Figure 1 (cartoon, rainbow, N blue to C red):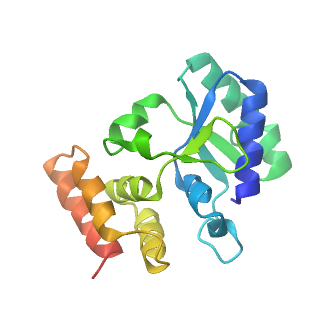
Figure 2: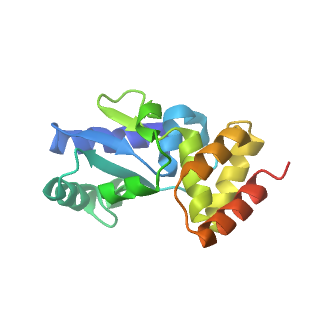
Length: 176
């Protein structure tokens, strides 16, 4: 995924639903802060989707956007990338205060993306191997401050099992 591809998805989304703002919540959100991550040597070259959420959330609009921009649809087949439409229930997994830290998506009006530290905290909470690798890569590139990621991760309400899993994921991503 490149910034140009993300912008294309957002512009298409907004042409279908101009009254809605767009939130970018997954790995593609990093492009708003670090467009170079979509370059051929960047970690997002193997990302072919953007997790988008209309704001305010409206189920009929989410379905419309999914039909137009979703995986295996005409847009995806034509352009090679697609949108995954997320429900606003995902907000429960985000660190408190995340809205105040949203990053505007360059070249897009009424579109914002997660702050990289908030995204990293969520990726470590999920703790899938690919997510830990992405956070590790971002840390190695000097794009994340470990103390901020830890602070945001610790601010998310977690079960005891999630505390253990996400703490191990953090230690993997930030071994120092």
